[in-house]
Each structure stands twice: as structure tokens, then as C-alpha cells.
Length: 338
Image 1: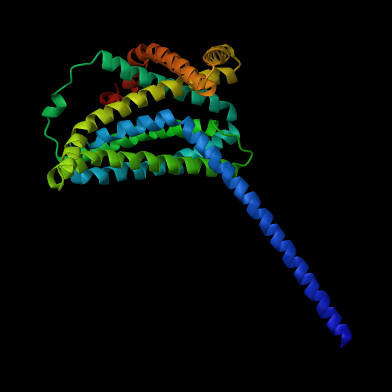
Image 2: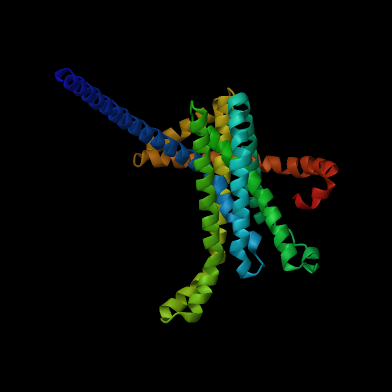
């Protein structure tokens, strides 16, 4: 009997020891999981910040696709575009980015620089068109297009534009962090894709409804201040959209120029990066206060100037060489090219 009791006592001791070990393993796993989670979120935040120029431009561009359509259709249209954007990023572009990083990592920098050139071109073209506006063509306005067909056209155009911008976001994000784990890379890109898409189209949904909110407040507001605020909101929205567009253009040139500078450095040409870094350091030290901010501001400004110069060089190349050649092989797309 005493032997049996001793055996049970040993079993209980073993169970107690095992439970303690399991608890320790669980505790360590939780710590590791929290650390990995924090790292993933931190990398995702850095990647998202790197794609800021494209994100702001996306938010500035998208509202135009609901202009002229019934107010009741604005949010459903935005949801259609957002849903396609989630699909583009998570189902098509995320696996493509991971495969590219795994099997053709040397191609990431050239593709990133190609995207940077696109950002520089788009930013410079917006500035060029603002300084040299073209008279609007009224041929399309004269056409009688029913609302459903117009909505379909707008959604298709928005999805195509979103795909290009999403490809840039995913490529920029992929190059913004380092991860030894295929799974972690996928999670980081997934977090970036979901977060940026939700942010962009959430902001767009708010923007396109702000004038409706202002109109409503101006009509039903009980206080004069409320009605005045509603009228001010309606008048201010075009200005706000212009401000967002300007910020988006500046961000595109900054991010595009920054991508080109870092890409050249990765390819072995260090002079542009070292020169900009040297100028920024010298200016920040001469100022003596807020050196970190001044250094960033000077760097971003020089990157933006470089992006603008490159974009202006690319405008005639794209409009006079690339677009005509593309139109020969894809004549049905000619009307969509600028």
C-alpha cells in the first residue's frame, strides 16, 4: 500500500513538474509572440509610411470617380472600388511580391525604381498641367450616357488606377522592411494592404459625404452657428480637395525622388545619396535647433526637387514615345492614355 502511495506521489510530482514546464513554455511563447507581433506591426508601420506619397495621391484621386453621379450611389461606388482594391492587393499583388522577393530579389530594386519614375512622372505632369492647362474637350459631355453605364465606366477606370497604385504600394512596402521569414513577410504585407486600403477608402468615403453633411446642417441646423458651419463646409470642400491634391503631388515627388536616390545607391552609384545626405547634415548643423527635423526637411526637399526634374524629363519621353508605341499595339486603350 505504501508503495502504491509512493508511486502516486511520484506521478503527482511529475505532473506538477510537467505543468510548470508547460506554463513556462506558454509564457515564453507569449513573450515571443508579442515581440514578433510588435515587430510585424512596426515593420508594417514603416512600410506604410514609405508608401505615403502613393497613399495620399490615391485618396486625392479617388473622389473624382463619383463626381456627377447621384449622391445615393457615392458610397456603393466607393465600396465597389475598395473591394476590388482588397482583392488586387491580397490575392494578386501580395503573392506576386512574395514570390518576387523569394526567387528574384535582385529585380525588386529595378521595379521599385520604375515605380519611383512613375511617381515622379505623375507628380511633374500634374504641375505641368496646372501651369499649362488644356481646354477641356466637350465631346464626351455632349454624349448621352445613362447613370448606370457611367457608373460602370467610372468603377472600371478607378479599379485600373487602383491596381497601378496598389502595385507601387506593395513594392515600396516590400523594400521597406527586412524579414527572414516568408510567413512574417506575408503577414506584414497583408497588414499594410488591409490598413492602407481601409484608411484610403475610409477617408474617401468621409470626403465625398462632407458636402452632403454641410448641406444638411445648413438646412436643418437649429442654431445659426450650425447652419453657418454647414454652409462654410460646403464652400470649403473644393479647397480641401485642392489642398489634398497639392500635398499628394508633393508627396509623390518626394517619395519618387527618394526611391530613385536609394535605388541608385543600391546599384552602386552613391554620389546622389551621399551628396543629399551631406547637404542635409550641413544645413541641420548650421541651424542648431531641431536638427533631426531640419535634416529630414532638407532631404525631402532635395529628393522632391530631384523627382520633379526627373519627372519633367520623362514627360516628353512618355507622351511622344511610349504612349504612341503603346497605342499602336493597343488601339482600344488609346482614349485612356494621356
